[in-house]
Length: 153
Image (tube, rainbow, N blue to C red; front, side):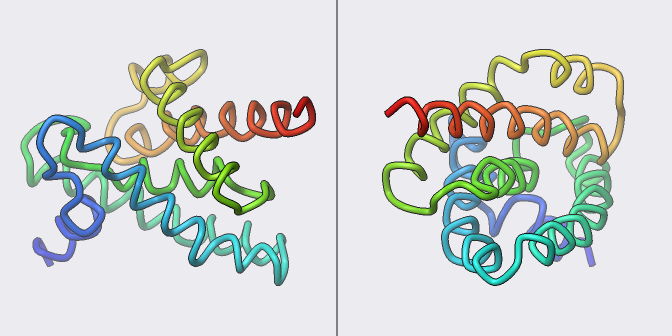
């Protein structure tokens, strides 16, 4: 079970990339958004939301168990939150090269800077939910910013 938790928490070991594990995890999330979630949204956005929610809950548990395994709160090796963050960033946005690139850049910006309430969530909520929810907040900002930029261009 420990190996499965580490595999998923690190996004197939992307979290072990030196120096930029969060960026590596976000790249995995970009692929998931493009290959799976974008296609699911084309079928039904309601089913996509349901699928996200159903998988988000176990991801919180995985992130919490991974904190215990790595012996550190929100270890940099845990990047499952970046995967979900990228998927949420791209939700109902076009899945083409330009939008994926801009969405990736926006998500990384908001994930690193942690604007309110992401920073507050990161400081106040412990365990797996805290690991996951601050990135979800950053992804919501990135999603909205991507929508605004798409309308301006």
